[in-house]
Image (cartoon, rainbow over all chains, first blue to last red; front, side, top):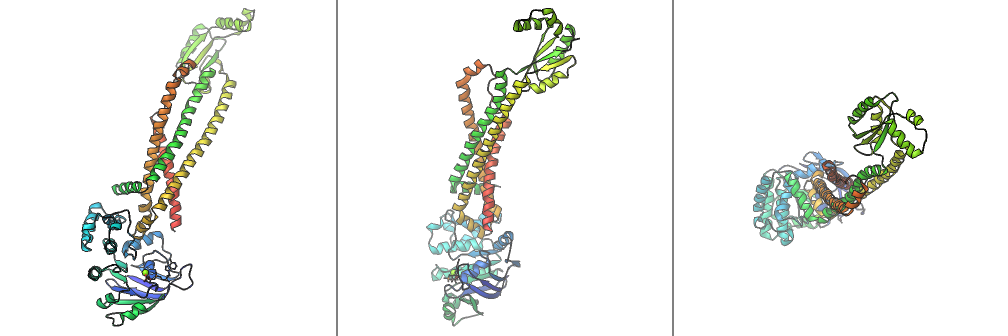
Length: 233
Length: 288
Ligand SMILES: Nc1ncnc2c1ncn2[C@@H]1O[C@H](COP(=O)(O)OP(=O)(O)OP(=O)(O)O)[C@@H](O)[C@H]1O
Ligand SMILES: [Mg+2]
């Protein structure tokens, strides 16, 4: 579902690569943690996956589509296969929670009734149906994060990309969100979830990719006793 | 379609300045353009009738006698552009010339003159065409419609119209430019929203179509506004100068007919769309 071949990313104004020679692949229905210390390149890697940026060298295939030198149309198609939960949420401040979530369906041209039922269902799932008509700035950080999650989930994407989706949540809500993400993986989505949270890595036994200064330093499956080492590099 | 309109309305609420700017720019430029068009519609008619070039004289062939002249007059009256035909006998012509020239030998004059017909055009300003038609009628020898005066008038008119059209193009391009800037600004103000739309998979059409629709609507609104302003100006002009118009004896001023009014409003939408399209294309180029 996701394939990277020798991907290197060097930002224009820096000489050290943010990612260097990263190769990996994630299958359908697989749940993968992406970890590493701050500045390791997690967000950079995720941004490449949904076409927000292009890699300097290498190739990226998303659901069979090559993102290297892709046309705008192809990038748009890829984005419709991908649901993204951003580290900074990226909610539209002038739109209600309902409209923010509905946007992901609107851009796909779905009919109004369908948008309504699906948005309501997903808001129920993340426990925010009672805030459907609130504006994002009236919500707490954790609530905004769950709106972002709802927007990523509502289109039933084949690939789910989350940047610190539990960063603003207490333990109970983190568990709930992880449950929702795992359910998405069980329904067939490939899920990539960037996190610093050692507890999360220890509790949820999934494959873990660790980045350090742009390099993929470990790719392991199962439980981690040394999760702290991976997170801090 | 309904979704597109909803998103358009949302856009207007988000940046009402764009809607107002576009509407105002279109209205101002169309008022200028419309006033020019109205003026030029009447200029030609009024100068022609003021200079008295709405009639021409057809000299009939020497062999045409009184009954035949009447026949020719009937044929001339039947021409589509003709309002009135008046016959003049050689004798009457001689009398008139005698008054004008002070000539003595009316026998000579009477022998040299033929029957003639004074033909009035229905619409002033069509004399060259009418002259050509009159020339073809059997029995007509020569047609005189004051070609020299007429040509001078037309030359003046050509300069005026050329100048007017240049002015028009300038006004309309300034308007399209203003709209283009307004749309670019709106895209800038909405940039965060647009960025989010794109990242969740919005196509170019999804982002830009509402803007084009919005501008088409504000162009239409500007056109209607311009029409309203023009009509008010026109009415106050007519009521203020009603006396002068009657005194000059020119035909009463007319406002645009339905077709012209419609094209004015559509022109508004077209300019606004053109401005928005240019801005949208630039936006797409930058997004590459
Ligand atoms: N737009 C940019 N321009 C230049 N350098 C950048 C840019 N974005 C990130 N970087 C650099 O790339 C490196 C990786 O950053 P990235 O945001 O991917 O880290 P991260 O692993 O997501 O960190 P965190 O855990 O703090 O979110 C950092 O050194 C950062 O300074
Ligand atoms: Mg990050």
